[in-house]
Length: 463
Image (cartoon, rainbow, N blue to C red; front, side, top):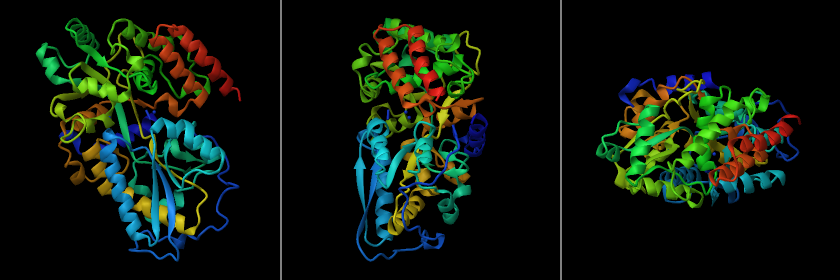
């Protein structure tokens, strides 16, 4: 996966450095499903390049998305345009949009629908063992391989299908990628004559300086535990080489010294007062608001957050005031200190239970969403790194300084790793959330955290 991502970077960053933001693997199995359509259209039945296609009766296609709220408005606008174009192309088609919060879709609604063999026809899908590959093994997902060939776009994607591929077949399409790092308020750093937090000493000095001056060093909203889990994931991976993929092979244990060291570091930051006071009562949106209001000087988040600092966005007041850097090398850590949490885990999946009209609508939807225009819009308007190969001409349109810094950070990464919720079973990941919130609340030690999670991981690995 690491080599694959570096290949991705080479393609995405072929423009050189003219370009400088829930809520959060492959095993063999049959792709057949008892819930597949009784009538399977031939490959020639699709009409991806046609104008308005014909159908005898009006029909609807359910579409589950997670683009809700002000922070997601740019992504929602792109989806709305794709829906509009697709409905115009397919006579009688109406999409029924169902927008819900990321974690609710991923951990509650979609698993229940998959268990009942009744998922939406199109839905937001997370890659990896815990989601896409599990559903693919159960026969719930549409094999997209022949559709990509039919549309002639398979080779237009970057090497991004690792978390969506089972037995050589593709079961999900990543909409884009992200990398996680430190956003920082350049004005505050300049006010206190501080260097950008690119080294551990500079980061700690900045944190201590801001704390002494009544400014929260790093905004954090831990009401939903996936938010602090982002930073924890990176801290652990910097200490423990082979994390997180090694947890499912048994090569890495949650309670081994290197992993516990990463957990301890997060706990130290809590005790040092580096995070928002009362973070367990703060939401993900609160975290951004505190950063945008200048109440906090830094924020660890995904590159997708860059869209919040654009003109007309929720944190437009920060336009031109935000920088982005990788978490600097940790003192005493021996794993690759340039390694980044960077992946293409979020995308769309499609039900294996489609009739001919629904299948045609899916093909048109894919055609209208996965193309140069929409990928470029995602990058320019929402800071979503493309999952498809964009031309140098398209990439040269990037002028946002934060996005340029994101791309520069990615280019400098020696290796990459995915977030552990992409490989850990839900029971294990849920336990990490519980234990992290206990750690933050001073109700568990780092070792107790690791021991509790490893107990569940060992049980899962033995199955």
